[in-house]
Image (cartoon, rainbow over all chains, first blue to last red; front, side, top):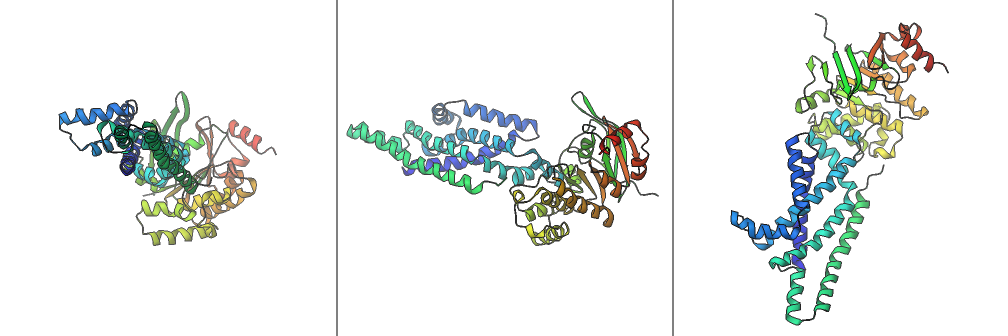
Length: 200
Length: 248
């Protein structure tokens, strides 16, 4: 369970950082950046996570990218999830009233300042709930690391089952363990959403 | 040598798709001058105002502020915009920041003033627009008139060379219009602020404007001092417009 938590938190942190940068690319006034952002999102969100993980672990070693299975998992989960974070943050950016950015431009802020000081702080507040969905999906997606034998929740359950041949209690237990992680996450995101809401 | 005008628009044309919204606009605004732009809706007066700090880029013609032509979008333009204050119809206060933070954001992030310094200036300006007691409030907690006064303080905090007002009272309830116009009148009369004001408030035009610019269908139809414009408009179009809005 600890591995699952660590995988989830590190992947989510990476996905938030990368996803926000990609979202900024997608609304940037520079066309090549917009295109790069779009390619990143479309490639990653339209490919099965399992395929990405296997490609990275077995394929990328051929071109010299070799990391431990744990680190590889974080990289792949982070990159895959970043595509969803980027789209979510982008929709948040689009939901910020046009006048906010106009006022910021009129004050003389530059594009990065407008994004960082005025638009993104408001955008994040509106997308806390969908980011919560992404977090919960990611928590469950980390089970895919079992296919490369990373000792996370599902892999542990699988090995336990192999040893005991009692699949029902073992996998039910695993399901409950995921619930123990995801239910409080959902509540935490709900709390965060209320806390940062902007009165309008 | 006579001082050059602060804002000069020369041969400005703009289209939204097929719609020709600004047609051959020539206009100069002198230092310390208050120019009020009026006209029917859709006449291009808001677009004219927004073109002056390039919130709306124009396809033809030149716009210069204090002798500097407006550059392309980027750092140069941001620097120039810092010298051009703008007050919007819908206030556009930063919703996630307090009143005081709204006013100090520009001085701190653009002018690089210290926090203490910017807050002293901010409080002084909020005092001046009569809203210092709301410094820690958020925009949504304020009435429209209060929000617009904060927006004026935010624009003033940049110590701009010229202030643009894009229909500053059009979104306000009638009883709040006066408190905003009073602040604007004071700026115009006592501080000699250079102002370009797009408005439907004919009373403000009469008492504050040095010149009234009347626009229709993207063109400047007439430019005249307010007393002459309101008593003896030269163009048929202006006479027609005035008869409609002054009928009641």
